[in-house]
Length: 334
Ligand SMILES: NC(=O)C1=CN([C@@H]2O[C@H](COP(=O)(O)OP(=O)(O)OC[C@H]3O[C@@H](n4cnc5c(N)ncnc54)[C@H](O)[C@@H]3O)[C@@H](O)[C@H]2O)C=CC1
Ligand SMILES: O=C([O-])CC(=O)C(=O)O
Image 1 (cartoon, protein in one colour):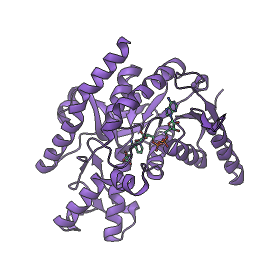
Image 2: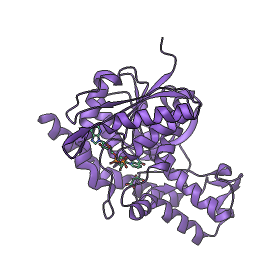
Image 3: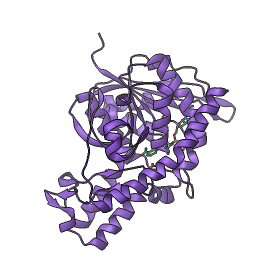
């Protein structure tokens, strides 16, 4: 009988590698990493196997138990057999943006990558919970949901945890309080119009709006909304330490069944969809995470000005949903 949960990470680049490493250090799960071979001059090398071995040896150095394996796959989908038995599959494969690009610029290329990976998840890990990270994440989560055909509770996009961590970082630096005592939620699409919710954010129980001026709050909201871009401009590629930590927070909530409320991108419809004004695509909202994936979707209260921001953010996702559908239809027709 399998005792430890297995988490597979497909795409062992910057985000995937750091996710695997952090997951292994936490010691809660066994980790399987999947990535393409790379060309090194004349040779084809298998970095994913080297990365897994390196992480495994790090565990020995740290006296942590756990098993980490690397598997080389092909772009066409060979080599995914080891997905079998995965409790969670994290998709971090695909292109990151470079300075001057928007996340939406990645849609066309990354949806092709996603199509192969989802078909392999369906084949080998049909009961897994899938966490989508690849950008543009709300659209990719929706595409994954459509391609997988899994219940909506098991297809979850990562973004809100990261955006909220950024917001907390900026608040913490401004008012010089530990981020541990800051509660701050960022919801909406993972783009420049995301919605940091001031009305429910607090520091040690004191409302944030009573601690900072309106001007300062607006400055922190803007910096959070452009938080990903700030790092892309500095590094030439996108962030990976905080994204990896955010993924791990979601995985831990699922594996330990701790019922955390975390903002995640999920498929909205029905009554909650109506509350949020979204029918039939994915956007970031607070959800309760546990063993079954999304166990509840929280209807968070918003002030009228926050609801306006929310609607703008939803619109920024909605206007690309049709493109996703066209791409999905074109691909299924091939
Ligand atoms: N949702 C979020 O908040 C965040 C999303 N991201 C997104 O995550 C994705 C990965 O970012 P990075 O790790 O920085 O990029 P990266 O370029 O360092 O790594 C991507 C990896 O995917 C692999 N890959 C590409 N096609 C594949 C395929 N068909 N099968 C298996 N592996 C494949 C590549 O070989 C590479 O190792 C990007 O789309 C990025 O925009 C990054 C940070 C935060
Ligand atoms: O900015 C990017 O392209 C990567 C990402 O989603 C983030 O770091 O928020």
